[in-house]
Structure formats: structure tokens, C-alpha cells
Length: 215
Image 1 (cartoon, rainbow, N blue to C red):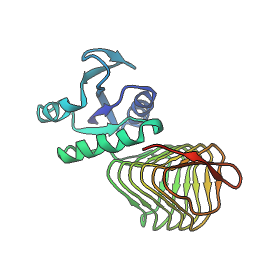
Image 2 (tube, rainbow, N blue to C red):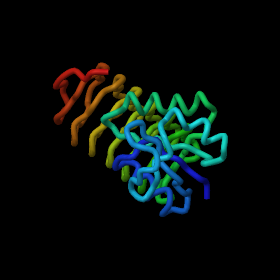
Image 3 (cartoon, helix red, strand yellow):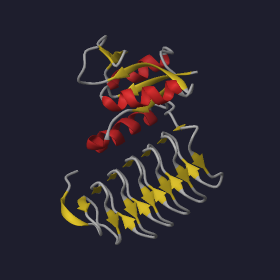
Image 4 (cartoon, rainbow, N blue to C red):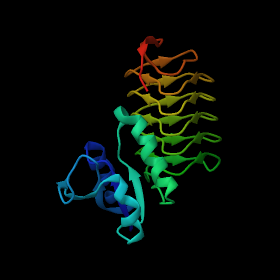
């Protein structure tokens, strides 16, 4: 099994550890967190150091790959952490749960994490560092840009497009050919029926803008 280090030490690190190890995909050897002391144990895994320590420990062979265990409320840091790892030429984890279906004509880029029972149809694109929650359905030709976090049961109809660093709440539905801007949040159960500007929170059926979202 590949030796994996995680950036982040909150609940998402516990979740990723479970899926990586229970599927036989890899072993999580430790966590990096700028707000925890080295040697502290979180979810039975040691804190290996701060994010800045990653390149040196990688060169020493402490791990072989890195996953971004940072949740939806820190999407800007999700992007920064991934770009830091990429800049230092450290391989990011790309994980597809064995119960999920990914069509051979789909494009899944580096750093994506796809959880259980997802369906990703032909000609779809998941750009770098996309997180896709369990039972999500990404229809033909849909596209999710880098660093976006899609909660469980997200559904994108054909040709829908989600911008960079978005958070789609649980059970969000985006109808066909709709485009969502950058850093958009959707509330749970939102049904997106028209194009959406960047940096907003939308909610409802159909979804409407509720407020601006800072970046």
C-alpha cells in the first residue's frame, strides 16, 4: 500500500483515513497541521509537522503521496495547500472508491477524491483537487473546476459547469448546461436552474442568491 500523509487533522482526515485504509488503497502515516504540535496524536495518527515541513519529510521517504484533508469551510486553503504540494512536485492522492463508476471517457485529474457509489458519465471533467461526496451523479459532459467540494448526493445534469473553489451542499441539483461561478456556496437541497455569479450563497427551489460570500 502507498504511504500517505494528510494535510489537515480535523474530521475530514478521519474520513479519508477510513476510506484509504478500509479499501486497501493506502496507509495514512501521519498528518500535517499548522495549528497542532508535532507528535500530537489525532485520530490515532501522529502530527508530523507543519505544512512547510512536507517537502523535507517527503525527500526523506516518510511518505509517498499527500491528500488534502481540508473541508468546505476552508476552500481557499484547500487550493493553497494543493498548489504548495504541486509546486514541490509531491504526488497528490487521486482516489476513486471501488464502488463508484467512472466512464472511460471521463477525465479525472490529479488530487480528486471520489467517495462511494458515485456515477461519473462519459465526457465529464473533474479538475484538480475536486472532492465528490458519496452517491453523487455527474452526468454527460458536466465539468467541475479545481478545488471544489461537492457534498453527498450532488447531481449535475448534462453540460452543467461548476466553477473553482465552490461548495455544493448536500443533495444539490444543477440542471443541464447551467454555469456556476467561482467560490459559490449552495445550501442543502438547492436546485440551481439559472447561471450563477461568483462569490455568492444560493439556496432554495429554485435557488436564488441570499448573500455574498467573501474570498
